[in-house]
Image: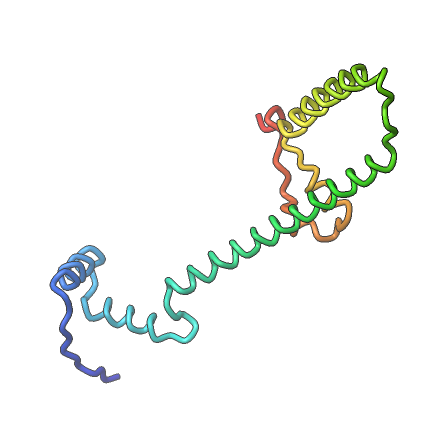
Length: 153
């Protein structure tokens, strides 16, 4: 098979790096240039940087989709709770306001403590709700659950 001869002009720094690579790999400079050119011209190969960027953009797109889903679940959860709370809460008479505030502070402390325990165990209410709604699409919800710190040991 005959090959075409080319005389190329490249930057001195590129020539130096090409020489070093050829010596290090134990191949000819022509074979390195030929491989680089075939990779560049290959229809399926294309620009390796473009392929890398496309994969990264796909990953970012999937992450964004999960974030958007989680945000929608959180918004709907808060909205549903607020509607429920406003429809079932009875106004507290003035004489019982101080006791109601104290009870509210105690309930809030209990809520924060429970939330802290939930998060420390690696649980996610958003993931739990999403999996309950669509158990057949676990991969969309980051189904690989993290183990609790005490379980990981």
